Length: 380
Image 1 (cartoon, rainbow, N blue to C red):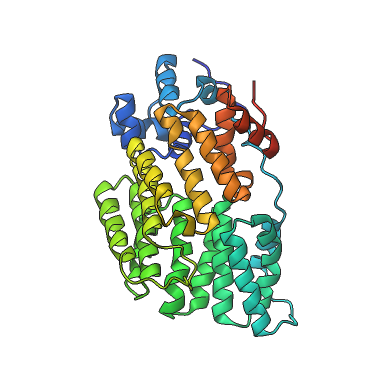
Image 2: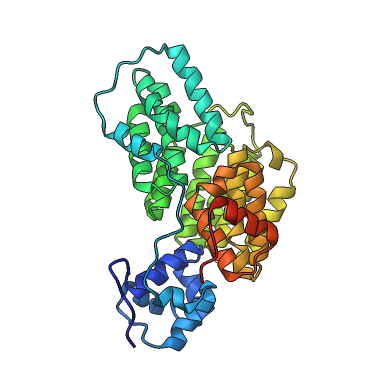
């Protein structure tokens, strides 16, 4: 059969791989749901084996919970994301090696960094993007402040799907830390997050565990183990994922500095949220939903930063369509929007899921209203 192509199209196997990864399924989990071998899936995704039977394409579409036409039709651009001009300004700031002179004292710069962390933890991404280029200049002469600013920059860029740029900022944070473990280990959290976003899961795991061995800070060490566990889960390494998350859980039960000086949000609830995401990545969708519900009912849930809670809800929402409940996914996104609106309105991952929910239609009225506010409409 002939597949329609245009300059925006990609090979069908690669499109299957992208959609599978977006669903959080490993090749093995995808193969199990199709009744195929992992080797068969790998060959399809690499283009070694052609998908030339519509019945097989329809089976794949059913597992991915989408219309077969989405696989066969020319690739459409992703849902429009509001223009966040700050990303271009941050790119320019990272490319500039001659920093502008600033009339800012170290004390003023420290207050600005504190405010930037607060903006991040409350999910105020547009405002943060506007502030970061000047903050990179203002903190250039103070290593601890500059490393922290690079960390914030990397974290927000991961959120907005600019993983390559996030990797650059995270690497700058580690370089700025200059072998000081009190700075290097927290900076490596951003490295691991950027590597996971780029799909380099083994590298993320290695980086996180190497840094974890250099710090005695329980929150930083625990967060690095969470990152390593999530990387293992995304790589389909079930045993390693569980072991690493168990280690993080043990650290979460130990003494923690509740002032959270490194802005990790680490604690028992963060571990529960990570276990939920890891279960989804491993194809254990029902377990993922159960762990999510346990996390949001826990006493520590309200104490997580708003960004952390809303980000977890966005992650959790992706599991519900996989158990046949897209309406519930929409309501979880509504909950995220009520906590930190930019997590839903600015993040491509949330906007894509919301688009999929309304395309299946009919969406619940409040979910449809959110889609309209965000600027999404149902496609024919």
